[in-house]
Length: 250
Figure 1 (cartoon, helix red, strand yellow):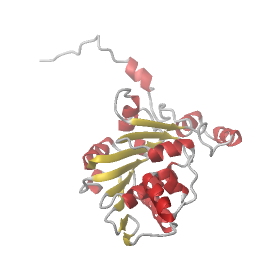
Figure 2 (cartoon, helix red, strand yellow):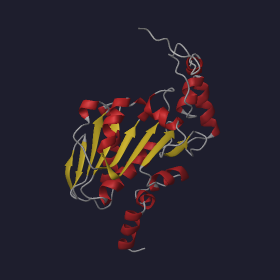
Figure 3 (cartoon, one colour):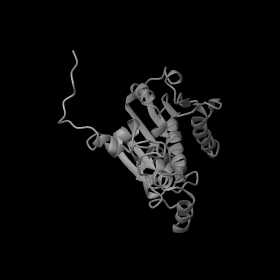
Figure 4 (cartoon, helix red, strand yellow):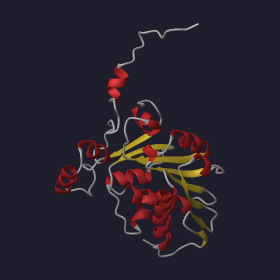
């Protein structure tokens, strides 16, 4: 394959682009890299390679869609910066690097006018962006509902939202979207049993080291009640009935 054909293949296919940096994507990673869904929920276990996968997608988007923004939003600035650092490392590992206009802990700006920006999961720290091409919500189950509501209008009509997370109890917008069977969000789910990063021996070691809630949540991707809840979700729901009319006081 000629250099020109290789560049064209990388531009058209993020999987080919990632392979060029030595990243041999698993089946689920290929599906996510190639997804063009406007909205996608990625429910995944810990240490299955989600950060590496999405970092390749972020870099591919910035390189091949000029003058557009890629935003990384996490519960804390440090977490967002960690993913941006991964994107920056991938960029610096390229054989031929386009010129950078800016490269610091919270922003990587390319000569084509595109940016990859890391932001904190606080409403006051994320305003001011619009026309976003790719919005990455990392550790999404821990991002507050009001922050999620604030970032939605920032995404352009041709933009994409990727919400990635392990579960964190039966609460919040991430859980609600997963429980809604008719919304338009594309779904990806990767437990330890679907990931090539985990052998049966490693799964047993992790299971034996953790409580049932943590293993079920962080590795089997189960939305369960947290250890801090006084009453289980099902008990709370059972306490309400549509058949009982509320009392009205005058």
